[in-house]
Image 1 (cartoon, one colour):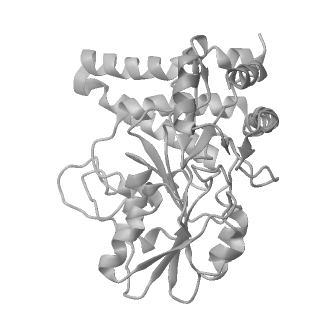
Image 2: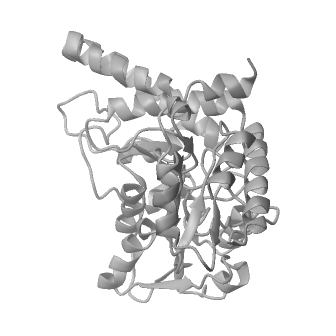
Image 3: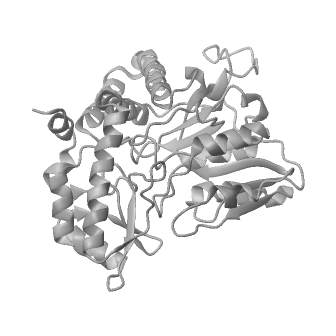
Length: 374
């Protein structure tokens, strides 16, 4: 059995449909399901007696996540409920001044817009570069930056176009000006290699339920040690402090790094499932995953164009991603999604575009099946 077949066998969804909708929800592998079941069984049979084991698993999964991100320190990675939770922690925790600005884009998923828009209550303005031809141009973005800009908040990969921004270029620009670079990483993490140190990323938030193939209700929040003291914990609980195992004393000294934002009892089911999926992704290898997804999306682009579709997603080196979006003059994307579902093919429609998002365990044959269904 080839590596692809071995990994593919871990995803039971492949037995009943062509699933290319990972930009919405990534299906759980059987190992993740088994891990969650094991946690439930442990709680049922041991109650509190198994608690320290579950705490140990949280630390192990944190280490796996730090490896995927290439974080310098494991404590720079924390667990949150989802991307919105992580970004809201940042927007609420900064010391804003009236007249400050945040720079982003007008094509963001709401998770990376609403936390910044609400800052208007503090006299902060959220400025948005326009998407043009499915791209967020670097020059358009940085043209909005001035001496009042405190944060650049941008999705690594845009959900409705698949456009991938150059994190290293934007991060370097922000670092030179001491501007906080906050990244919504949900549509790239797990399919495109990332190095938060190399790319000058100060903060990254990402839910686990898309390309990471984890469960809903759990996410990652990376905060570089370089900027951790700029962000005040606005949600604080018993696990936020250094001596959190000691319930008395009331010593409000925060834990190192992003761990201080874990302010209460954790989600052992979601963390266990995420750990299993991270093991698969790390074993498959970042470069091999990227290579396979590039092959599949290249084939999709050619097939779509042959069938009269206009491909919106940039295919340039450094700008392509696992998301391919397209339009057709004679086809309604929402209707297409429903008709394809009836044929056992799962895709999505976003912003008036058909959106197709295969992962590394998908095959060339499945691409052919999707195109034939179209």
